[in-house]
Length: 142
Image (cartoon, rainbow, N blue to C red):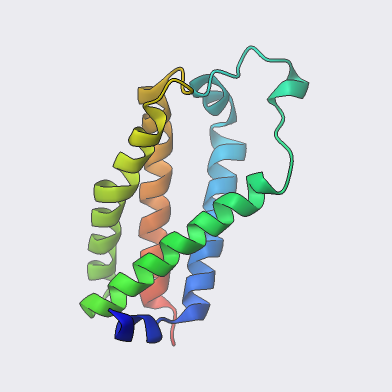
């Protein structure tokens, strides 16, 4: 596994991280902002209280996306994946086997008023973003 780490294409990792970040911004800020407020129980707060600010809300998800992209790149190298089809299979396995269930696991706690809806809203983003990230990691030339 350590040998695979040395072979990671870091420019592709950064591109995959950027893809994750852009898709997240589009999904959560443009496509489902009202639904996100609802599933997090913040829909009845004033507009001012609904706003989130601070670097953690931008940098935090970006760093988490970087970790996911590194893990995907490591698996791609360790498994010898070179084709888009195989990269998409890996993206599907990681998305449905880890990222989706992790989303539901995080939501199933007293701080989330609508855990199932939260998971159903968030898991598709992680699945699609991971598929795109895996595609980028394989398609970007070294």
